[in-house]
Image (tube, rainbow, N blue to C red; front, side, top):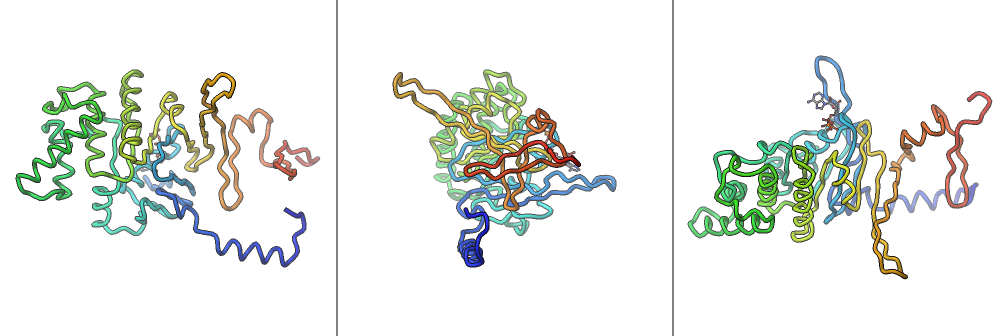
Length: 322
Ligand SMILES: Nc1ncnc2c1ncn2[C@@H]1O[C@H](COP(=O)(O)OP(=O)(O)OP(=O)(O)O)[C@@H](O)[C@H]1O
């Protein structure tokens, strides 16, 4: 890039920008400057403050962040249970801001499946596992009302329970199963409508670490075997470090992202996972530096920038008026 572009070069850049596809045009989930403001007792809380997020089809990714950073707010919006105040959110081609009540219902039945932290919120207590899994198919009118249709739904329910290794619990009601078994059945229920996206809010929050591992393996199975895109909100570092991509949310915005990839040592054939942290750069050029970085160098209010041939240096303010 030249430091002083000519007018013709600038005009060329504008034309190139115009031809560029819209932000997130090929993503399955696109959140573009998403805002959600709550008003409680006359006080305004900005739960999401212009959040940008893209998730590709077939991804298995985790969202992490401190309590109150906006994770559940985002999940409720993506689940079609809450409406954003401003910005844009699209999932599998559906616009979450302009959907009618009827569209929203269809969206929840056909496009997304969800698994919540409270096992009791995922399953109906008086139904068996098979009935719980068959219910969303029945509500969606899938396969009709005939006896053959009922049999087809029961077969599909059993297939899903087998896939998640809880077929032995098919005739049990929730209180007759462990927390881990209930969550696996809950994943089967969420998958029953064959959703494009599976959303999970702290699905392992109430479980011990061994059971949490099994639940995470169940999400991986859904992702790998059925091709379902999976977004998991988690506090669990073990879960977060198992996925290829972890996005951190801070103060209602996506702040940093950790990408992991496997590297095989050519000499030993030994495989290691290499993790690298990235910061999100929004379209206005805004960048959020991790608090531990700015604290370590005592950066506040203003930093010095230098454009180098292959990087940008960010240094503590060294001006006299700093
Ligand atoms: N219905 C609501 N009314 C008012 N404020 C709300 C509402 N829901 C969330 N908030 C506020 O929005 C902010 C984000 O909340 P959110 O539940 O999304 O955070 P979170 O990251 O999921 O936290 P946690 O990890 O504790 O579940 C918080 O300040 C919260 O108090």
